[in-house]
Figure 1 (cartoon, helix red, strand yellow):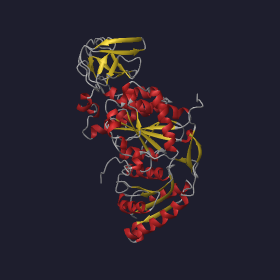
Figure 2: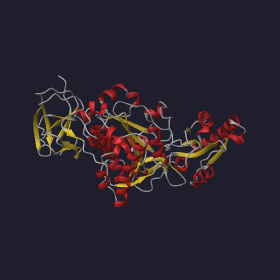
Figure 3: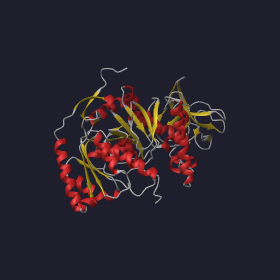
Figure 4: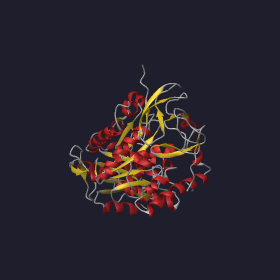
Length: 94
Length: 393
């Protein structure tokens, strides 16, 4: 059986990056700063894409590398696919 | 704090100006692109000589000529260079006289061959070979000696990145960057496009408000320059291919890239052609293309380069040994002939960033002490150029 891969870059992140193709219903284990959890995937997740590992309210930061990479444009549940359909790129030039 | 299992020294070539080389080249340097054929022929005929060719030198707008002059001085005084044979045409706009003087002041043997004064390329090539050959024999008598890692200036680059790069290989390089700076060395990143979206984070790490301002200015100027050329760099940086591969936002892409520079405070932002002056973390205002970026790092005094790749790219640089690092297992397995370091265990979940970081640091010390890298062995390291803002003339 193929071993499925994921990477949590920083323990304070709220998204996990998939390095295998996953199907909805699969379970992934994550070691967050708040403790170890099991996440059931609510969507199919392709290689390189992100999974929410904490619930994220609309307007809240998406956190990866320990930093805000964008804001949720709608409520995101644990296990959902996180990408351009529910994340706003809110970079502002200085 | 250093522990006794970490290497603290490497074996390098001490130069008259106090710097230390990880290689011992006779650099044959074109002052202007017209001399490139002669430069290449001289270097090809002399063991231990490397050709430094480029597309700059004349004509040029003042800002470019000044930058190119500074860069040529930096290349001639790069720590990996034992001696220099400069090759010029005779009528170039770049400040040849000043370049020669500055490199001579470093204590290195310098010779200048002028194509027009020599009577043409054949004669110039013969004179250049004679000079380079003499230097190469002197160079061959120099031995490596034990030097502190604090004397290393290391550059980094990412090329042909994919979704594995940020979470794996780049973080390993960041670990090594922190360690190099911790022991007193210097580390250089460039590619201003990679910083887009992280300037607030980097500015918070600047050693002073003045340096924080330079970070914002470098990014702002870059965006403006893009606009003046019809490019919306902010809107287009995350490409269709990036999004298909999982990158959602500009900041996510840049954070992945900037992972290469670790967590140290940012000491300064350098113009292209400027020299690193003390230990710390430096940003060079350089382009993403390795052709020009690694040259800028060499001119800044770097002795080697840590280059991460996702999909695999074979390139290097004539003056800087490049250690090619990938976190993509397929790339390592399929292109091992061009790869130097496998960091794919991070994605596999079998090896940590710290474990790979220590291994990469040790590999860097081996390369600094003489181990050849794949791009050196396979001679994929010949291509280079010098940055210019544009051929207005």
